[in-house]
Amino acid sequence: MLSRDPITFFITGTDSGVGKTLVAAALLQSARTRGCSTLGMKPLAVGCDETPMGLCSEDALLLREHSSIDVPFAMTNPVSLRPTLAPHVAALQEGRRLDAGRLEGYCRAVLMQRAGLTLIEGVGGWHVPLNTRQTMADLAKLLRHPVILVVGMCTGGINHALLTARAILADGLPLAGWVANQIEPDLPFLQEHIDAIAQRLPAPCLGHIPFMHGLSVSERVAMAASHLALDALPGFASAQGN
Image (tube, rainbow, N blue to C red; front, side, top):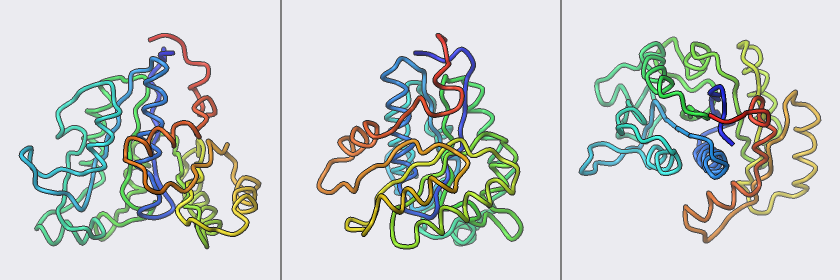
């Protein structure tokens, strides 16, 4: 299955560490196994490590691994920051300034590749600051693509999900779907938590990823992919050959 018209989604989460990259990689892999050309990017990353290729984000490397279109690493992750801090603080520590318009330009270059499915992954949550006046939401608003929300299923997760969804909609962007990713191993009444969110969000639940322990990264991506309903994404089920 290859898409006649390229489709793009912006991936955000209810917080840092809720599994945005895992979900993005799983969606890319699912689409790729069905014959769709795929491309994932993370325009901004923190906590990057020095490698022979330069500063690299593990998240960006995982997105590249599950993308079928090969682009230079600088396109996958154009802005890499060393400190594992909020982006605006990490940038200040390195004497740099982040700007949503510049990040948009990097994203537009990737979109020119016209992959069947392109996923642009944000950093942190919806309103993580980029500078004194802009947040990641400003990048998403400039791009104008539907949003996939990754919900970390944990104590307080319902509130985080509803507030984030409200912010996305208030910013004028469509919520394409959401994913329940279990990050708390023994969350009581898990299904009741998922049901409470599903009843209140105006978008389909793409799946529930169970808590995973002791698996390799590739095994986690494969497991996540098996729990996601790719056809629930707007524009994907009806896509034809590309």
